[in-house]
Amino acid sequence: MVERVDGHIYMVDLTFAGVSGFISSYIVVGEDVAIVETGPSASAEGLLAALGEVGVNRADVKYLVVTHIHLDHAGASGHLIERLPNAKLLVHPRGAPHMADPRKLLESARKVMGPILDLYGGVKPVPPGRILQAEDGMTIDLGGGVKLTVVETPGHATHHMSILDEGTRGVFTGDSAGVYIPELDALVPTAPPPFNLEKALRSLGKMMELKPERIYYTHFGPHGEALRMLEEYRRQLTKLGEIIGSMVREGKGDAEIMKAVLDEVPQYRRVVEELSDHPIISGMVSRAVEGIISYFRWLMEKGLF
Image (cartoon, rainbow, N blue to C red; front, side, top):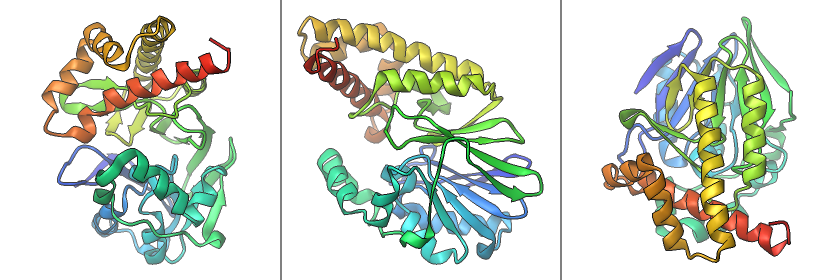
């Protein structure tokens, strides 16, 4: 599915593992074209087909922009580079080596995801000469008044960046602003380990200072009340930090902490129960709780909590 969501921005629903409404990729059209978020390798052909639906010549795609290198955001990069002759991959410097040689990335993903990893498809390396390392504040000019600016936003990952579209004042937030589930009008955290709560909250504040008007969620779709959603996510992370931090300090176990979170935040329980047929989505809550538990235990080991 391809939908024009703003004058020069098209959203592509990258149906993944038979599930729609989970991963968004965006085609940004100026005189040149950028694709923001490549999605997993398994969705590469669908994304290429979407270019044709929009009327974009593959030779006009100059940039693949990924918010971070997790496979649901960047896995298809190597496959697409082979098919887009003039494109270069714009990625955080910490992620660039893993795009050129994805072996460690795949090893790490296999440990975390197990057999689910097979759904994402294989990952191909991106030739180093076709990788551009992003810098905070860096702007790429697509012509026709269309400009994209890099905003470094660590927390979900050390190699995370968000992208500001100067014309719409919309931010492609990747996983830095949570997961929005339109059918439930629910926002849930995306904070699997290793997650850094302090950095994530700081990144949210940084994005709010930009006074964006829209969010282009990777998971999932556009939302027209950016500041409200960013503030809501900051409120959620703060509350989770309070609940989980105090229970970790008390030595509570993971299962007890998870139950407390679901009791304190009914919308999380709703997501877990109503989307139980979609374990990748419904499981995000438990993975986020796990990530924040790990964060506080890491602080305790360092003597900082």
